[in-house]
Length: 468
Ligand SMILES: Nc1nc2c(ncn2[C@@H]2O[C@H](COP(=O)(O)OP(=O)(O)OP(=O)(O)O)[C@@H](O)[C@H]2O)c(=O)[nH]1
View (tube, rainbow, N blue to C red):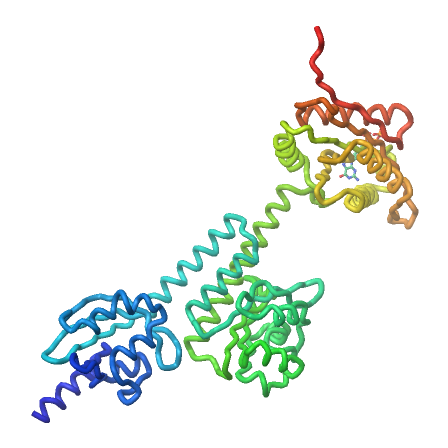
């Protein structure tokens, strides 16, 4: 009998499936095989009865009550197949398993097959396609990065993750997404410089190499931040540089731990996946932004181009069509621009165009639409502002431009002026198209040119029905 028992134990210990059996009457776990210990980390002496183990090991309490509980509490329910469950292991990690239950005399036999690797692969595929979909739908970069952080934290539930973005101009790191680190910590880290001994992320950004700090409290890189880290409840930080496909630094991806710890092979695999995914997200987002910039904005001045001005303008005209909203267009044309080009060269002419755009951006508000609609022709659309205010803005523009100058390639001071035409919608005008208002502004501009240049003229658009 003894030898049969030993043989069964040998058989069970060589099977790759985790097996346990418990007494139906007492619920006591009487046996677990080696695969069970390998899967969940428990030895037989760590476990008492099946119910307490299962309740503690199930992160979702409803799952125990609705799915597994009946098989434990009801001794008549004898078998079940293919129950999908997430179980917390002794080290706190989570395994995704399929459970089979059978009954043999007074024993309930439990079989657990591990599909965690399959689950991880599917989740990662889903994360990748979610992220690309968000880029295609023009979601904000912060939201895209948060999706990645949440995905990694879901895969490794004992991790807190952060993505910092590298600010090339300032040589510092900005918080891209770290939704589960305390705000005071993120605020303190935002703007940290990249440097050889700056925590884990600053050092990873500086060296473009992975930096593993297993124990923040005793690591020299963390000395200035040790108290901050303690208050935030973090004890280890593993940081990976996020590099573009050409090797340019885009930011850092970091995994924080609540206890001092070094990464396992699986952790390294997760870090590789996360920084690669973040790299694709940031690069795709920036490529899309650049395409949009090229499609909608003038390459020389950075203002909207003609197409974007009309698209945005039509939107505003439609939304304000029924209301008696004041609408005005300021049209502006450089005086004798051909002469500037002829005397000082095309490059100086370009400097003049840029200077004019800079001045416009300083004087106009962010709500206004400022565009370069032709070679040396600009148009600004101002909504919800009364005409006296619009005329004073036009005058400010004229005045500032008259006082400004650019330096030619020979270091000569080049002054220039503009002629301006303003068109506004009459008070009783209910309907007016962008094209109609633009024609009026053009007419006013022609008036300024004809009567001596460097001046502002104004035309009002009315379509009051005629009495006859
Ligand atoms: N430097 C530079 N010049 C440009 C650009 N686009 C158009 N121009 C020049 O702008 C000049 C416009 O000349 P005109 O239409 O005769 O107008 P103007 O000399 O400003 O004369 P008025 O409008 O009557 O004051 C031409 O010489 C164009 O070559 C550009 O992108 N850069």
